[in-house]
Image (cartoon, rainbow, N blue to C red; front, side, top):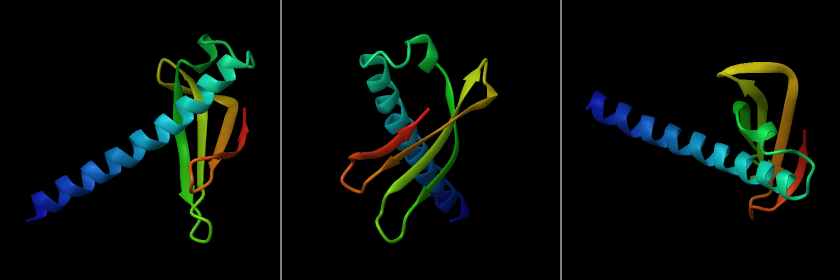
Length: 92
């Protein structure tokens, strides 16, 4: 029973992390399209924090640029998405 619960928890956490990374990647791709960032700028990033508002269901995703899996201090960015998927705010 413990193995089953652990497996379910792992799948749920994995899906959540994938969803956050997908949200960030989409927004970074938009920055490339608008020429605010280059393709090299968005190659590697790490999710550093995530929260969801209980009141509005907005997602708050914080991430940092990385190089060879090492986070680069000073490259903190965030992404705030409404419950309908619309980007409310994004900074880099």
